Length: 135
Image 1 (cartoon, rainbow, N blue to C red):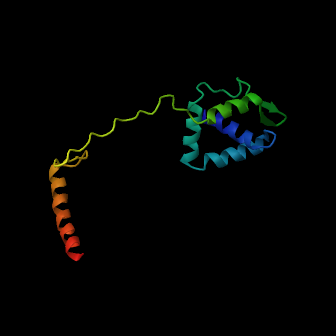
Image 2: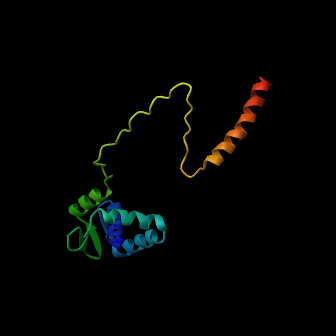
Image 3: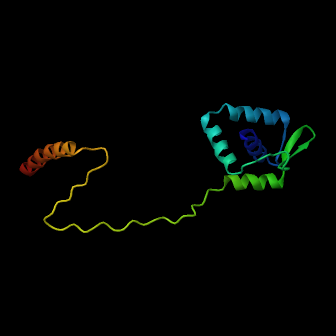
């Protein structure tokens, strides 16, 4: 399927949507050797249109030594390239609970133990004292 997406992308890049077989082969060879990024991109695009078949779906035409993208092919490519719209609304988390004066709240991050947090607090205290003395 990556081959078919690449064919559509190459053909749409030509002004009239027509490329000779030599041009098509050359451009596809460049893209195929351009790295993982192109392969990943074509996989993502192909996943948006399962069952893509550029020949049986008449997305391209074979014309005298080359291929030409059809209007239907351009429409399918546009559909593939549209940014997906998130149908779910963004959930808003409730506001944090107010902090009562006089009570200290300690948030423990995942993956950090209490002893590591205590060590960090001990290291911070001397720095604060020196900053206070210097002023």
